Length: 434
Ligand code: FAD
Image (cartoon, rainbow, N blue to C red; front, side, top):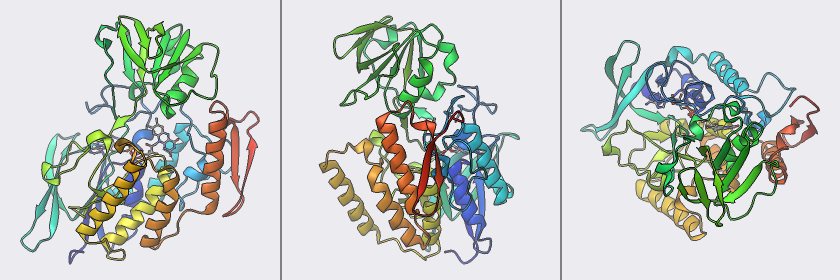
């Protein structure tokens, strides 16, 4: 650590940034922290807006939240361990506004606002090596209210800028001749606007299924088209047809890979997102090719710049409590309580894990999907940080909920969970509450 207080920049005021700030703010004797948020609110993707293009600052809308979204994880396991939801009863899969309020309460409770600069867009982050070998970070930002540009120096930078904003849009032969509306799920807001329309949803992962479940109630017909190895287990509704991927389109006619075709009015791409760090200097040498971010150790630390930290890389995890453990691990690294291996060893370890996953047939772009690997990961970084790992009941609820979703993704949110103790939980149907 530098001789004085360590200067920490946090980029982004979503959950990840708030959790990092909460732990840094708790050690005022060690750190000075500034959290930069480009919008006028904290909460990141949980801040719903009807806008789909530009926000009030004239920047591309960040949030991909849609009007009716209910969480896909029960609140009992989404909650951050040191800040449980005040409301213990009621539905487990809550409306997004409940999460937004929870994050507001979190920021108030841990007195984060004095350290947050809203309406501040980070434009450039550049490392500088001093003669003594120490690395510092020059962080340039624009105050969107005054339009004044400034630059400040930091010792460590946490990148918490989110990764559900820049949509991945695969090429489709002939799509330029399609006269209907084309949107990405990032721009999807509410189902009523598809009343009477024939809608093709491309992609059957979380957002594809979720959007299909609400759009079909208004649309005339919905085609859910995907390249999954297997057909969906559940027939969603009589006006929903499952189709393989789109081969090409000619005007309003879509041709699918099984030779079938359909007349379509609206195409909704539910085809994922890209990791982007547009403000990062080229000096950092970061690759995001095939949506795989490297070279990052333990999904957190840039191996060439070990004071540059990446939050939010792992997918298929329990994000909020994961951020809680990750933040504590990174502070332990900064304070020397946890030691990173030498650079060469970090590279070796990272490459070995990557190669073994590739050999197992995991595509490069899916390496960040932790699934079953998440539990060992939480245990490992919690141990290194000297903080508690996840309680066994969290994993049990997660696995129960996954099983229920696998059985029927149309009904799994109709259940309520209750934590009994660190090991046990109860689950019951919602009976009209959900
Ligand atoms: P974000 O919430 O995206 O926050 C990033 C912040 O960085 C934003 O406020 C943004 O304005 C700011 N920012 C970006 N660039 C800059 C810049 N240059 N300068 C300053 N500020 C910047 N997770 C769950 O646990 N349960 C769910 O049910 C769930 N549902 C989801 C539904 C949808 C539709 C989506 C998109 C995601 C969902 N997730 C869910 C995942 C969710 O993204 C994570 O839980 C979590 O909110 C990610 O937080 P984050 O802080 O990493 O990113």
